[in-house]
Image (cartoon, rainbow, N blue to C red; front, side, top):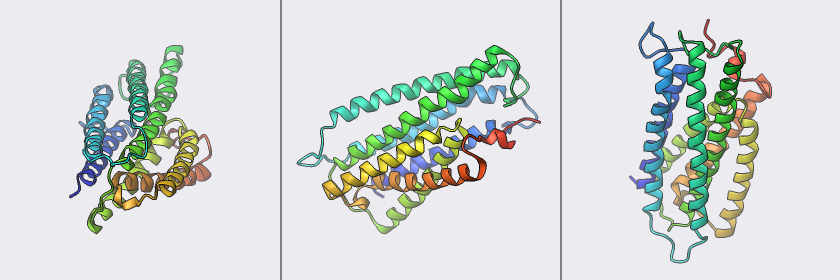
Length: 257
């Protein structure tokens, strides 16, 4: 199997593991029945870091292992600098998310309940955890993945088999679904991510035409494209059905009885 295709599969499995743990907390499902969610919520960021580091590092190594074009299409140095800056923002957002969650837990030691507490400290922690941290994590990460697309198209193209195409396509659909769920759960961050992704799609299509790129000769780019095209209509469908500012908690999901 092509190394990038294998890395795409690893990243997709990491997304699924990430989602399973996150929504175990979000939907009030403790790992041990009848036990508090406090420890589980406190360990949540470690589960995220482990899953996302494994998947994203595998993908980055796979892309960079491919030989560069004899005549590069672009200068990669600005991409690396921008990517490093974006990942620092993501890391800071993850820290805010952890801190906010733990402060919330001081008000809900019995669970990771999304019920609001009547206290100023809780309101600040809730805003940091539910709004600012999600925006700082999701938006830079979306852009960082797009930069990785350009790193890949700057490498020599190589064909992949029909079976590998099927793996990439299936994983891309999973990526789109995971991103859609993550965005609508994250304080309506999708209202920024969807327009951003539409702009990135347009830029990618222009670059594809300009450089005469063959999509299936760049597996990660195909994966990103399928995931993005899947994510946008799913989010729009949810918004048209549930409302532009509705979150899953407003519909009763993840709220303790």
